[in-house]
Length: 364
Image (cartoon, rainbow, N blue to C red):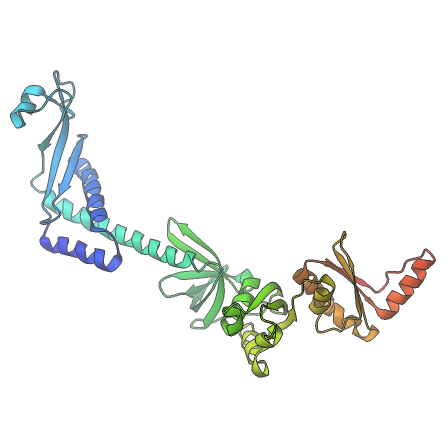
């Protein structure tokens, strides 16, 4: 093996971060297999590669015995002491058996091993880099699409964005820049595999962290997120500093911060509400933008009965129950919404032993 090869190993160590000792050991192990395969031998051998000049030698390792049963694995005490007079019974004697043309085989094998180790190391570095970004946002460029995924170039690796993780009616073409949320990073036999999402609630959370300095700094906290991707989302925020308005911080001057996020999510509507440790207040806030007259909390059932003005009932419920459904997801409480008139009629009938639930909505 030439000095140029040794220098190349040192360069790989510097550039790729792969220890040259690991490379030497891997090459030696591969050369043992190559020797046995190419020279049709079952001998127990050791390959030594000089770390300074690259000279390679192959040694057959034989056990010193009194009577030889397998000459490939054993050597007599007399023959061993001709090599070294200090050998005793049971010792391992090493005899050089380096083939004349072994250099060519060694060079080819070493090249294959180094290439493989570089590939494994690069995969390892990519995996380590992206496993730390799991549940975070990345930006990439659309490369192609098949029947199952859109493939996004992240620079050093291509990630898969499943079609069922796209928002409704969302389409991308080659070359588009895309922000997506990393849902999973796996280390497979084919290298790291990264799965992305555009529908995950975590995407909304991370976008707010990017756009709102108060959230990034920890002054404002995101306590809960509920999302129906592509249609509407609700986010509950809380301020550690009484002088900082959490909702105003997220909205930004003239709504610029939240509008940036809305644009990124293709027009998805976002309701930003104040989180509260008081259930009645939190539930009332969660039904924004509707006005709430009263909230009755039933702890055992983990249910809240909400009374709204008659003209606000449809707004509180939302299209196909969406507003109420998102409020229930956001708070974790079952929400029963009634208009003011319905509540009065129901309470009046309850006094006479009758109940009325018509035109009310209950959301889990």
